[in-house]
Length: 401
Image (tube, rainbow, N blue to C red; front, side):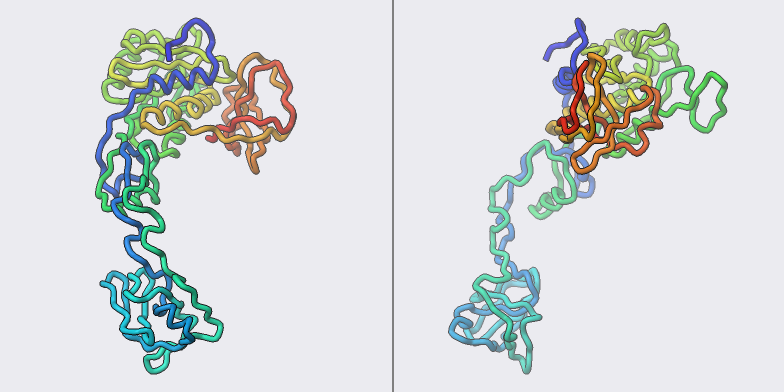
C-alpha cells in the first residue's frame, strides 16, 4: 500500500498502511522453557500418532469383552500393567489384567472396567451388579487425537501452554519463533516531570509513558526501554538517532501536532525516517504520525494527550507489532451499543466503554486529556463519522485495553 500525505486517511487505511510497512522481525530458535508468549515462525506436524498406543484412561481391570458377552463376570488377575511399561499379554478369557491410567492396553484386552465397579477377593476380580462393560470402554484409541503428519501448529500462532505442550509431546526441544521486538517508549515535553519529584505550578507528572509500558507488558512485551526527551531539536536528534540504532520499535508520545515546539516530525525526517502518514480522520488522536527508519525500524509518534496516546497505542501500534511478529490480524470484538448515541463530528470517534454480555455502555471522557475517565473501562468502541445518530443495539467494534 502506498503512502498518503494528501488528505486525512481513515483508521482502516492507517492500520493497513502500518501493517504493510511493518518490517518482519528476524526469526530465532528458542528452547521449550522460553517459548511461551512468542510467535511461531514454522509449521509443526505430528511426528507420530497421538496417542501413540491404545491408552487406558481409568484405573481398573482389562479383559476380553467377548468373555463378558458369554456371561463371565469374574476374572482372575494375571498381572498388573503399569504406565510406562511394555504391554502384558492376556493369558486367556478367564483372566484379566489390573491396569493403571495412562498404561498401554494389554494385548488381548479390549475393555476396561474402573476399579470402583469391581471387588477383588483372593486374586479374583468380580464385576459389581451395576457394572455394564462395553467394547473399547475407557480406552483412548491410538491416533484418536492426531495422526502422524497432521498439521498441529501454524506459523503465526502465539504460543501458550497448550502449544508448548504439543511441541514437547512431539519431541521438539526448540522452535523457530519471531525475535521479540526491542521497544523504546519515549515521552516528550518540557512540562513533564518524573513521578515522585516536586512540581512547579506549570508542570505535570508524566504518565503517558507508564500507561504505554503497562499496556505493552500486559500483552507480553518485555524488552522495553523508557526515556524522556525535552522540547529541544538538538537533544531529540541525538537521542532519537541512538534509539534508532538500538531498537526495532520507537513509540513516542507528544510533539507531533501543530505547535511551535512540536519538533518530532522534523527531527525524524532529518534522521531519514520515512513518513508513511501524518494525521488520521479520528477523534481523539488526529495528529498520529507513522514512519519507517532506514533499517526497517517502525516509529509511532502518538499525540501527547493521555487518552489519545492510549487509544492510538491500542488501535494502531499493537496491529503493527503483530504484523512485525508475523502474527495474523486480530479482529476487534463485536459488541452492540447499550444506548442511543449522537456522533456530531465528521470524524471517526473512539469512545471508552464498559462491556459485558456483548453490550457496550458508553463512558465518554471530558476530553482527550482526561485519563481518570478511563478508570473501570474495558476499552473503546469505534463509531463511524457523523453527523449521525446511532440507535441502541447498533453493532460496533470493541478494542480492549
